[in-house]
Length: 307
Image (cartoon, rainbow, N blue to C red; front, side, top):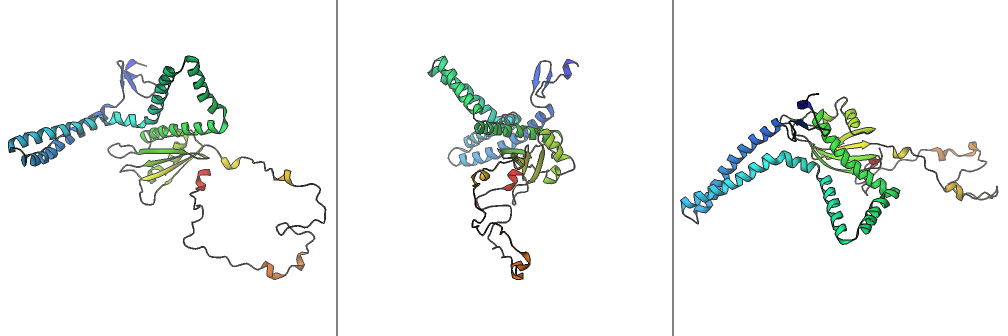
């Protein structure tokens, strides 16, 4: 492998000792957009500012002041559009960056306020207790999986899911853990639809890329078709065997002729003696229109979390 074709583990090209974070075609496209936005902003903002300034100053001074204000606003817009690819990378890694800053500055403040043995003891307690307590450890791991899944889905959209003509990727919204895995909300850009994700093999590719068992894609809003929801299944929470403690509370010295409740099956019943009126089908009551539909509850419980 030649030096010019080497790539780093993070997918960045390493040519001549330089690291390319943004591809050249993407950078040229954003520079072209920034140039257009600069002149449009200079013209619009400069004209409006000159018109307003001319009412309070000399027309020539107002025109010069409007031109300066328009140029300043245009330069800000130009810089924002050119730097947006890099800012987008920072936005994608914002939770990890915040966690890193909290860890670094927290350790620095702890070292300045306590001796070394005290700092090590605090770190051991902060790290060791969550790792030793099962519910806390599982909650932390669920949060970590949410961060991982967002990056894996972004990689899927960039690798094999169709994008629009401008190449804009969907916006990966926050994710939350569920009993079966994770749930992620995605906002599709113009040019994409839910059908693009429902094509043959796309869902299976998503599951493979997310290191999951199954991925289900559905609409998340009745009002906005661009808002979709991805349910990622890693485990089957309903397949575990639950041992009931109720048999331990049943007494063993119950006499044979003990009275039974109406909920227990009768003993010694002769079925031919049962009248036919008991077997008649009872009319089914109608559900009011304002009652929640099947599969939902008034308190917001969603059975699909356990799917």
